[in-house]
Every structure is written in C-alpha cells, then in structure tokens.
Image 1 (cartoon, rainbow, N blue to C red):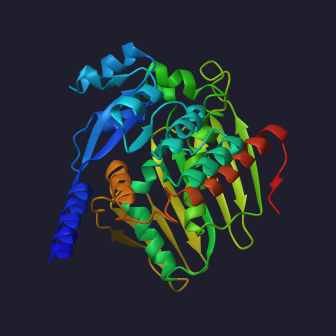
Image 2 (cartoon, rainbow, N blue to C red; image 1 turned 45 degrees about the vertical axis):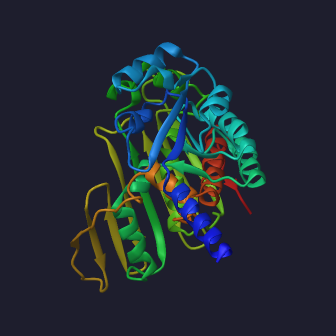
Length: 360
C-alpha cells in the first residue's frame, strides 16, 4: 500500500511538472522577428523569463512597447542563464551570433531555437550540431514558411503520389528590400553585413528555398549547387547582394531558388512539379493543383488551418521539449537544416567563385 501511495505521488508530481509553463529566455533583440514574441508574450504554456540584450536602450524601448517589466532585461546570455534559469533560449540577434547562443546554452542543457537560417556558414553549423548532440539538446530553426498550412497540404499530395515523382521545385522568396520595407536600423545594420549575416538576399531569402527543398526531397543531399548574385541597388546595399538565383540539382530533380530584395511586392510561394501534376502554393489557405491526364483541369484546393502547437514556433518548441512532438524530418529539425546549410554554404561559395559546387 505504501509503495502504491509513493507511485501515485510521483505520478502526480510528474504531471504537475509537465503542466508547468516552459521557461523561455530571449537571446538578442536586434532581429525584427523578435516582435513575434513581443507582440504576444503571454502564450499559453510559455513563460518569458528574460531578454539578454547588450544594448540596454534598445531592450528598454522594446520592453516598454510590449508592456513587459524592465526587470526581464539582462546584459548578457550568461547572466540570463544564471539568474533566470530558462529551459530554452530563442535567438533574435545576428545569424553570426547563433553559434555563441548554442555555446552558452547547450552545456547547461538548455534547448535552443534560432531564427532562420541555422548558421552564418557551414563551419558554424557543424560546431552547433556537435554541441547540440553532445549535450542532448534540441536545436531548432524557425522559418515563417514552417507555419504555412499549404506546405503540409502540398507534402501530403506528394507523399500520396498524386503528382508523381518530383521533378522540379521553384521557390520565390523576398520583398522590395530591407530598407524599402522599413526594417529597424539595428536590424538593417547587421542584415546587410557580409560577416554578421553571411551575405544579403542569398542568405536572407535563399535559406527558405534550401530548407523547403530539403524537406520536400525528404532530406536527400543534392549533387551540386550553382548560384549567381547581383547587386541592383549598390547605393543601398554596397556590401552585399540584393539578388540571388540558386540551382540545386538532384539525381532526378532540380530546385530553383529565386531570392530577392527586388520584388515589387512581398512573396513566399513555390511551384512544385511532379511527373504527372503540379502544385502552386503560398501562405494563403488555397493552392492550385493539377494532376492526372495531360488535359486535366487545374483545381483550386482549400486548405485547413494548422492547429496548435503546429501553427506557432514557440508553442511548437514547448511541445518538442515536452516530448509531445518528434521534430525529426520537419522543416525545423537539425538534420534537415544541416543539409539546407550545405546548400546555402555551397551557394555562397558558388556565387563568389563563379563555378558549380559539387557534393559527390
């Protein structure tokens, strides 16, 4: 009887612990995507326990705007980890800073989610992967496109074989340019720095296509990557490209990634072609699908919205840490993003060296 009571007590305590809010710390506030959390800091199941940002003026400005207490601010990641004791850290600084976040968090057993892409280059990515595996933490990458219901509806059609074997993926991503759309000065400063961001549009928007292509191809590593970059607006972007085109070749398919800060309007959409059909999708809850005979008609398909926690990066992170979701093979997962980083890293090298980069 005594053993039974102990078992019930332990089960109750475990369930109570499981139900507790996930303690999340924010590393950096210079990335404008930090407003994803600032604009809704009180999500169910999540508690924001601190913001590590060396620029105190910036931190105070943003905390005040979000009606959050100034006591949440910490001058460094080390201080935030020591005093706030987060279970997970989300990185909202430069891409170059992602490595440092993992270096600080992983040894403490703290899980990490970074904004896209995973790393500034392959060298950093390999170090981050090693730290994550050595310390047994989850290391996720957050892309806006991961939360598009159309992506999963398209994958479902592909996996059912309704458009045949994949042959071509064309991904269009970007906008009119960071300055043109009015990003903050702090964000603009590192986003257009070839060291802190690793490049311009090729990194900022090429990463979406690299991630989606790798996911749709179920993690398959490509044969080669060829990329070209241009700068149409050197007066605004003197240090980095604002236009990039990346060709990713596979044994039986090809992906074309068009990443640009020169679109006349914002876009994140893709065309997926199989042997017997195609899918045109974007962020909306409708997509165009044509499949079957050569004279088959194109249909407008309505898509169901994603349900929580699959529709929000922070709720998703919490579900992964609690063991409710296995992220393996997902657009956010480490393995998919390591291959995506190989594509992105090869694209930067290809554009600089003027030649195709072969993987095998």
